[in-house]
Length: 211
Image 1 (tube, rainbow, N blue to C red):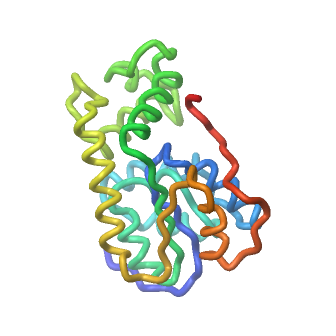
Image 2 (image 1 turned 45 degrees about the vertical axis):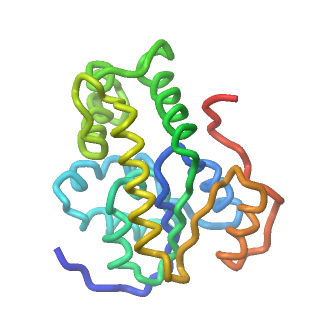
Image 3 (image 1 turned 90 degrees about the horizontal axis):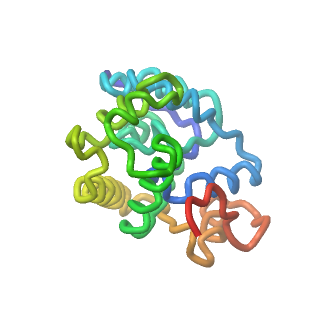
């Protein structure tokens, strides 16, 4: 499907989940931006699976700024750039080993009682959005083996490829910034990018998985 380009200013946070996106959401809310409803965004999974981005583009009309699914999923950002060329795009980055430990620990707590890395059955039985949503999302985003759902090598390769693709595409574009929210000064970089007056010195640290 080809969409007519529009000039609407939006902010899309296109870093993968567990890269500080919750802290970024808090910072954007505090700066006065209306954030998209994450549960409603996640419910667009079926459209994403079919490569039907019409409902996702329509969802972008409901707020000013958006983060996490479906904006963190592979290549959604490319469709969004085609439709919202004047939007601002923010890629949150994190050390890949720390990221993998964080996402598996977080999912363990949510879907496996904190006892182990979740299995296929754990994800299929998880009651999140709807029963089986997490498994469907896993197939759409990660495509790992059914007997090794959190295959570390494949997870990290997927994570790295996403970041590399985004960084390469946006390397010469002024409406893009990459940030590690744990680094000192990154919040001030964000405010400068958005032309906003800072409200604090560093990003708030929210949704922390481990110490």
